[in-house]
Image 1 (cartoon, rainbow, N blue to C red):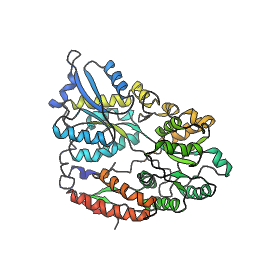
Image 2: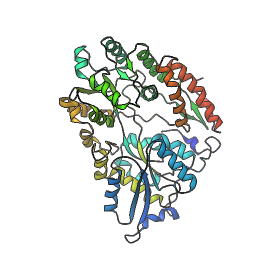
Image 3: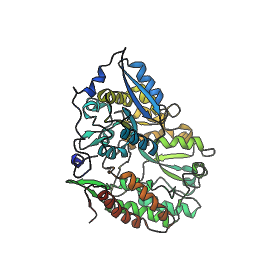
Image 4: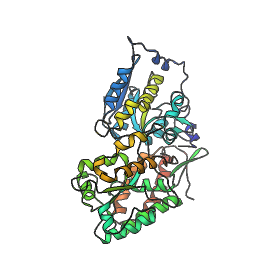
Length: 442
């Protein structure tokens, strides 16, 4: 996230003034790092990912002056709302597991603090793309812990039967959609409640719906990159090339892939284990390839980051930030997080993640194609782009988009109709919140 200097401008982004200043190293808030074995600093950490409790145990076993007390909470929106409520009540934890899209809103609300001073000494230990994604205007507001590079997987027997090979471009992907539909298969699934495919494709194509122009947020859902992504999406819908199974019935979605009814996926690394856990018939049939390219995006690969936030209310910010860095970069901790059984299959953000990739991708799924899949995933992680900014009302925007997405999937409106609505809605919503916003599509 670059060029968001306006985050420090109170007039533009309500209540952000002063929020980008890291606390001085000699403030009372930082003295907690000086705890002793007899009287250690205790950091409260809220999270939900599998394996986190074991990571905390590793930390506690190897540190005497600082100890972490871990509390498991519900993930996603529940965790975000829980953190906001706790901050409002004055009892936020020191550390909070979260995701990149939380960063700008929580910064605007002064829930999280600047960790630049404490993460910078370890910058070389992080992947460059993950470290950049933790920044707002060159300052770090989250300690990254995980990425999720995307790649393409497909049912090899289905493709072989139709003399198809992995598509290199999205135009070719659309052509294959028609071919597969003619043979009784769908090329991918787009659930009516989930517009994430459109979001990810716009990002991959080179869009950035939120940027900063001077002291204002510039909003543009109608740029060339988004229009290319919209065109691909619309063609697949119009040609009946997609399945529309709701994710509410996850088993049914997985069954479609297992049986080859839906033959391909743009998939995150961690999602491959979900396929193994739900498949019965297609083990060893799957091959991996780079995600097909948009003409406007090239080899761009998209991945949000997961991370650990240090809260503004923490009385031991330095200790908290340094503990988060340890959890994100220590070899034992990272190995545990990446483990598909003991951990959450998290793709590590350490500088050299290659040694972890093979265990992230289940050999049972890919069979003889496993080595190639590992190679594809490693290359995907090297092409992650950081041009995407999650704006201050991103969560509300996504909810509004999801409401209109169902009408797109059921052909009651076009993708461009939805994007034109989101353009107007997002600008107006920001203005209602007292945030300076301009229409960047004109």
